[in-house]
Length: 294
Image 1 (cartoon, helix red, strand yellow):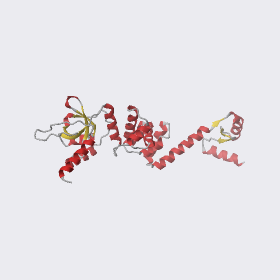
Image 2 (image 1 turned 135 degrees about the vertical axis):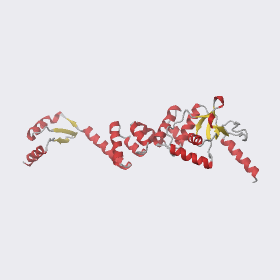
Image 3 (image 1 turned 30 degrees about the vertical axis):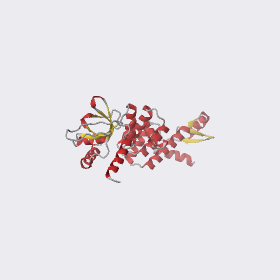
Image 4 (image 1 turned 120 degrees about the vertical axis):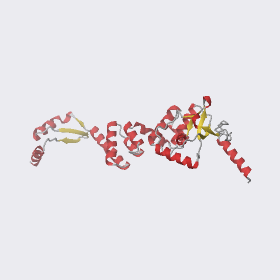
């Protein structure tokens, strides 16, 4: 195959990839050649940020590393924009590349121009964001929730769109039920999504926070956190099942008189229960011990 045929084949492939783009000629420099395909070099000053950008945290260190890569290798993947009024363009995807390009003083950036309405723009931005590997679980959860709410999608529809299991989508959304302090802890890397999934099984936000602090203080693994949560839930069940009943009032009075302490009888059902004998000092405990020896 000669060079002209190879070039032609590459051109057809690119045109298929950019089949939803307009062909623009953006002049970046009087001495530079104009580009007349879907990917064009657009002046950075003509690009505004994406109002639907779901990502709020951008690491200065990571942007700096990307900037160095762009300085040495150039921009491998163009950003995606749409044309708006007054000859400007609005960013759809690629804010990290745009920020890094600004950081090293680039005047233009290769851009894929796409015809998109607001809904499509939101979807592209969110989906592209979710597919990133360096996102924290809470950012993904917020993007997933936003896709479902604003595009009226079911979890099943979204799972197919993203190529993820429905259970994965559900697990991310459940993280948003955590106390905001714990969500921040996950975003900052103090605990993992696995920790969060364990804590979410506790409905009481105050207990959630206690577990969160315990994880940080004791450096608990996900496995140990699961055990801790299970023990808390089992203890709550026992406490809930324990109830004081009038059927044993006479017995309570009897034992209280004999032992010289306010006795409680708690029932578990089926004539089973717990006899609670409080004491306020070691001497009281020794006195009870003497009574039981008789």
